[in-house]
Image (cartoon, rainbow, N blue to C red; front, side, top):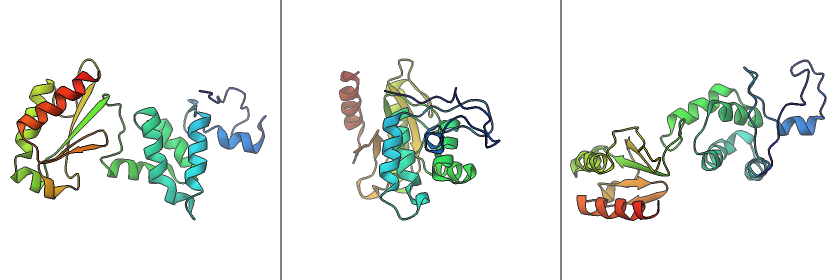
Length: 194
């Protein structure tokens, strides 16, 4: 994977750069620090493709955030700043979206991100007990990752599948109408893949 670095960029912010404007758009710099966020050509190509699907650049924000998270594993402060610059948005606007949606992560998670719903429908049908069972089976608490980096556990407010409560999501796969036995079966299958 090719990466573009900012090492050759001089005079940033003064209008006196040593690179052309097309290349400058490819090199996304965190505005408040000397740290430079390096973005792969393939990810930038995905951004460009996504933006083409929307009449307003800002409308591409969530798809670009999800694409970045899929490639990097989470959304770092540097990636949030880079996306803001790419979409020509205030950084706070991107940060607000990232912190609003539970599907967007600001820290790395394990290979298998287990999210258990404990909102009202799931709660009434045993969601808290399912969450506690998963935590016990994995040996971790809410927000933690197993020592081998394979599993992370998150309690979420709603997964939008109330008719099949209790529900958990592992990465992008939903598991409905959960019982302890179903949870154990799912975890066994996931552990086989590690």
